[in-house]
Image (cartoon, rainbow, N blue to C red):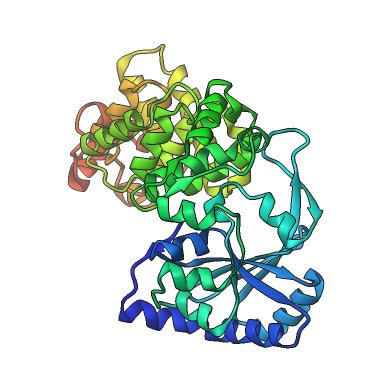
Length: 425
């Protein structure tokens, strides 16, 4: 959910997508397609909120629409899916197009089977009445999305389809499900209900609240496809002012596992302070800690998370092996395990290990330690080329880790000279 305030600078940015609006108006004027603004962007407009995310339902052939749009929008990122949908990423707005459809939920896991349908049937598949507005696509309504502020009466005069309770529920800020099985067929609606309550201050009507609480008690959220679940929470956690939403989801027991969201936030903030490391991507670390038990499904979210998870697992396995051995060796092994690892990987490992003393040691005392002298420097000092160069560098590192972490390059030279004199090499 992207919510913006309209000012002169933003109005200029919104007009950067003029070529998209003009192309859509031209296509519709030729009579082969009819477009409707729909869903959240219409709901937000009713509340005086301007959104960058524009949902459009179209009547017409999806393949033909894609063919008409693609050549005209070469500089625009346009993507097509196999569900009669396509997306256009403009300079300012993001447009999502879908043909009218019915969603069938044979497994009640939130993953629908898509069936072509009429606009009236498309309306009946939606989650809440406040998301059932189908607004005329015209120059006037486009200008509303580009910054004008119509009142509800004006908006309703251009509404082409809506649930009978639409205007009343918009006015009363009520969340009303469209049918009794709404939360059962798609448990992700539980998450959306909390989002709308948090960000838009909407309240469930009495019957919908009864259904909502029953779905919570029955743990319907556990039936939601895990990959889809994680994609939703990944988006939520990156919203502006996300903490209120995440805390509310936690209160409703709609977040996974043994970790409380704010507990994780506080622990990461504490690590950042103790480690003097402000660069940690807090939200990524918290997300991985919450969802680690679903790491296979996490792969759908991209290489960044996968890379952090793999490094974290390497760290956890290494730290577990350090439990035996003398203290000097443990410091050295800890350093070798953690050196050059992403700070997010280290933070995740620390969360899931229950605050490791060895990770804390590395981040507070050892992470800055390194040997400044190179192999070439050792040759110039007089160390013969061969394995002894590598051995001396490792011995110097161990000495620095255990005896003198702040040793500068001059101290390293003296140490190497002393080692050379003792061994004759």
